[in-house]
Image (cartoon, rainbow, N blue to C red; front, side, top):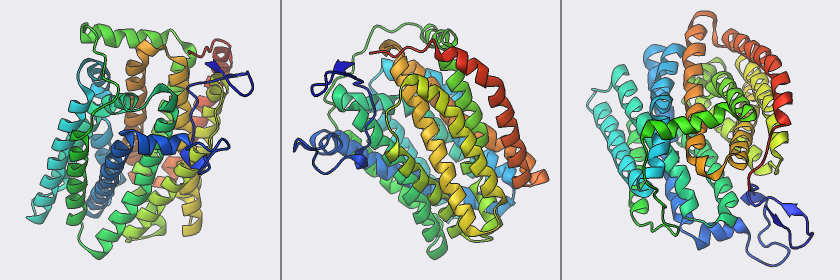
Length: 435
């Protein structure tokens, strides 16, 4: 933290700024930080390529979910698909965090994205010749999920090599906006292509944009070289990160809240095909509309958030996930399209705010030498918990209905939060922010 030149008060150097909240020119006539980051560093090229790739990823995710639902009419199999996409991070996430600190992050990303493009092309070819079935979709989705889990820590850490410390907050915010814009654009494009063209083109487009991302990555020359330290045994380095989490009550509590929220609230995004069929029967555009509405809510939520202290973030997360659970109930019980769309937007807003708050807490309270490993654990929970929740809720949804299963899950979440509330109040007094 450094003194503000205008007030003399302490300001946090790692506070997150939100690009669309900036004016075109600030009061001093300088270019806004977000615009400078996009135009004056290689992060702009990275952001463009990553955004295109994420749009393709979301297009393919919607297409796979639509195929699974058409073939099975089963929420359980949608959960299996989500598990194949997201659960691999639970197995390799900790190893990936250590790998991101050991080996060249840019090369890791280039190789993984190249393989991902080939897998998307393979799915398109198999579908074209009529050889793509239920098991093939799940297997290939699992392979792509494994690749995404393997490079997630390297991709996030690589941002710090493209911008200076002073611009890191703006870059993180831009990255979040890119992710949520992709969630908005990808499903909408996929829905239109499924209705008006052929679903095979969704996989072909994903392969093409991912290949373009590989070319962009190949042209990057990172401004801040990665500092590689002498490696220690993988297990020893992983254990150090886990020990820190266990020894820090506020940290493991906020991660536990995110785990519960991810399983019960974020999992609703993976079960959208089963939810959409209630208000938009037999229409892929309905699925795209609900998913896009959730992404729209996420974007608005991300752009309107303000810097908060670590203690305030610790208290906020339970309220945010609780609000998301209420939105999930409303969405699954809604009988009108308008109400379902509004609930989906609220679900996206609450979920995104909860994730950003948790990640911000981790970043401002974790010692710098442990950032990679703690963020990999954060990513493990963020990516794995929705898949696990979708699998369990999907299983019960096939038996008692998606609305009833969601209501029971939300009640369980409320009960768990009531038990955790006293522990969070006690841990709040021990929170310390790092420089």
